[in-house]
Length: 132
Image (cartoon, rainbow, N blue to C red; front, side, top):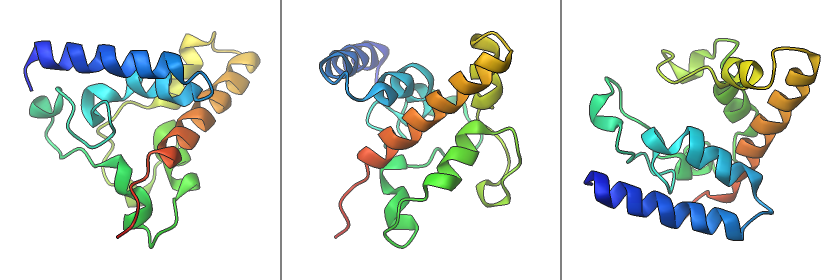
């Protein structure tokens, strides 16, 4: 996908997010995750050519876990402050630390991190593909 296509797609995605204020995780996803995972979470973001490891299609998490969305695993991987053997090597940002620093690196920031990560976990659950 060319850079113009990506910008147009991101603009459309942001417009959809604005219309869906009930899903705060959608905005967080577009801002922090879409460059790698794509605006539809399918693992096709514009940054993938620069990565050494494949980017997973996040719309198939439930299907890859026996039909059950692995919310706690997703939470742990997004947070990233503790190692997750099931995730393999850490090639994505440690969002728990990033969000904590952005929020002021204090006790309030800890609550903000939890809220942001919960929003992302819920958003990713909402984009799970229907099983065949």
